[in-house]
Amino acid sequence: IPLPPKHTGELLKDVVAQARALPNEGAVADYIPALAKVDPNYLGLAVVELDGQVHTAGDAHVPFSIQSISKVFGLTLAMERMGDSLWERVRMEPSGQAFNSIMQLEWEHGIPRNPFINAGAIVVADTLVCRYSASRTAFTQFVQSLAQNESIQVNEQVWDSEREHGARNAALAYLMKSFGNIKASVEHVLDHYFYQCSLDMSCVDLARALGFLANRGVQPGTDEVVCDPRSTHRINAMMSTSGMYDQSGEFAFSVGLPAKGGVGGGLVAVVPDYGVICAWSPRLNPYGNSHRGMFMVRTLAEELGLSVYS
Ligand code: GLN
Image 1 (cartoon, rainbow, N blue to C red):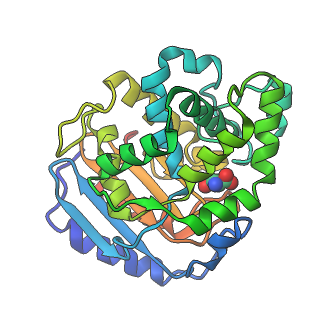
Image 2: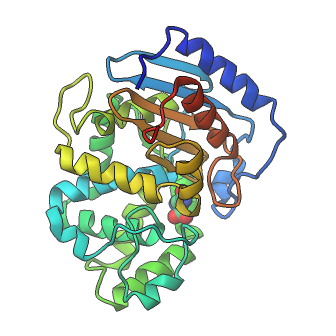
Image 3: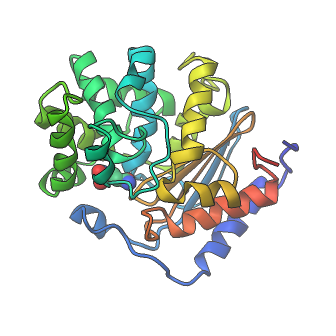
C-alpha cells in the first residue's frame, strides 16, 4: 500500500461533493419504519488511520443507525468467547441470497451460511445472550471502548420499531430454534439482536472502533488486544466474501476491501495496515447497501490505491 498522500482530507471533501452530485438513486429502508424518517440527503465520510489521524467530510460526526455493521462487533465478541465451537453453529460461506433470506436455513438444517446475514447474526446473538449475564450492557461497553466514545447509545425508537416489525427475523430465529441451533429463548435473543442493530454511531465512531481489524487485532490508540491475528484474518476474510451480502462479489471486484454494510446506510471498509473508511448515505440499492456509500468508498479506494488485491 502506497503512503497516503498528504491531501487525504481534501480528497474526502471532493469525493463527498461528487457523491452529492449523483442522481438520487435508491431509497431509505422503510421495512423498519423508524429508519424511513431519516433525512435521505445525509452524506458522511471518514477515514481513521492507524496513527490516529482522522479525516472527515460532510456529516461524518452525525450518529446514525449502525444496523448490520453491529454484526462485526457481535462476531468479534462471540469468537473470543466461543473459540472454534462457534463454527459448528454458523458457516463461513457466502450465501448468494438476500440478507434476510430464509430458504437455505430449511435445506441446511438451521445452520446459517455466515455470521453476516441475519440468520447468522441471530445465532451469534444467541451465543452472547448465553455467555453474558447482561449481553446488551457488555455489547455497548465493548463498542464504546473500541470507539473511545462513552456517549454511544441505543436509539430507542429504532429498537421499538425493529421489535414491532421483526416478523421476518422472528421467523428465522424460530426456524433455527426448531433445529436446535438457538439455545436461549427466541424473545431474549431477538431483543439482543434488535438492540445491537439499533445503536447509533457516527462515521468517525465506526472507523475508529474497527481499527483493530486493520492492525492484527490490536486497537490503535489504546493498544488493547481485541482479538488475535488469526481472528482478525478470519473476520476480514468473511467481510470480503459476505459483508456486502449478495453484492460482495461485485464489491471485491470493483473495490477490493473487506467491508460491511447496513440498512441504515453505513458502510465500513478495512484497509489492513492503513486504517478504516466509513461512509454513510441512507439511500439503499436493491441489495440493501448504501448507493452513495458504495460510490464514496470505491472512489476513495481507487484514488488512494487501497485494494488488497492489487
Ligand atoms: N436490523 C436489520 C434487520 O434485521 C439489519 C439488516 C441490515 O442492516 N442489513 O433486518
